[in-house]
Length: 139
Image (cartoon, rainbow, N blue to C red; front, side, top):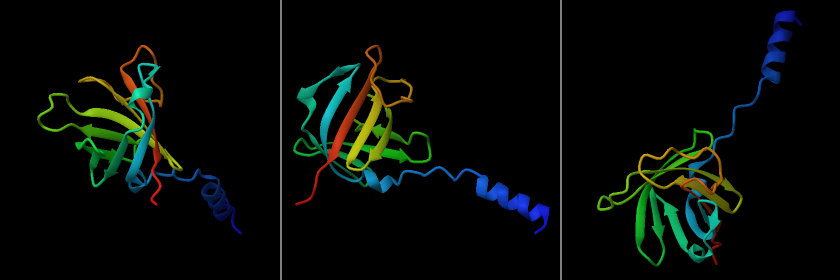
């Protein structure tokens, strides 16, 4: 085997694998809110709400509230933009998300012009919301 071929194999085998991308379809389904933290404070009164996510729609079951969303699974971490209805003056809500098994975590900023969060946390001094949801099992 020539040294050039051997060097080429070493480079290919030793190169890092491409980073796995999140499959956007993994976010689709019904999800129950189990944890809601805003500015570092847990708000248990908000838990229990069920959301239906899919086809670009984020729907609150039973309350018929809906926002559109866009995902970008190529960013690190993957990003989500929540697009409020046209009659709501609040602008696009910038967030990040991750799916780990049957847990969906979404972290987003509140307020117009706020930067997208970089970490899945809600510090006390920030206008950041951290939501954890569990996938609702179909009977």
